[in-house]
Image 1 (cartoon, rainbow, N blue to C red):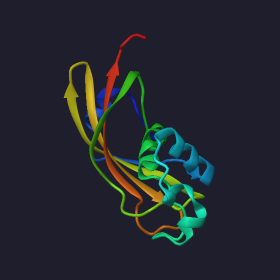
Image 2 (tube, helix red, strand yellow):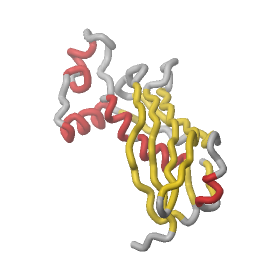
Image 3 (tube, helix red, strand yellow):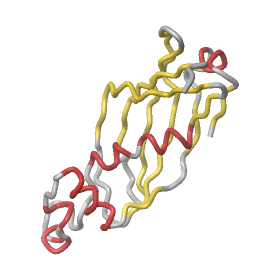
Image 4 (cartoon, helix red, strand yellow):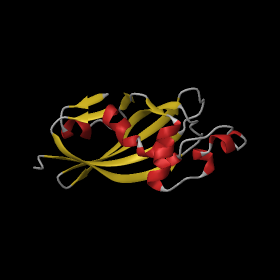
Length: 154
């Protein structure tokens, strides 16, 4: 985890490696729950018997499940003192180079790529590369755009 002493410290820190997040487990029941919530019940995710003879040989996590965990990874990777509001502004680019087998653990590596000024704060672009234990290629690479504001009351 990297902690910055306020927005000014972040403003001059583009290119900083943020470290590695904690591992998150993706057991089959978590994949099934995600399938129900998103109504994406494709058999490669939810049917272990059919998936065994499918293209990956096992059920795999949804790419969007992996993507949805970027917020958790970023919470582990980046803390900015004095920030009262952090807003997910979007994504510039997302790729899923390899599947995540059910039962695997994943974690994120972060790099603060860009910092730009916005009214009342800053906007960052952080490249998060998600690795899966035992998988040689990254399972997700995403450019995450976040807006940070100081002094906004609740």
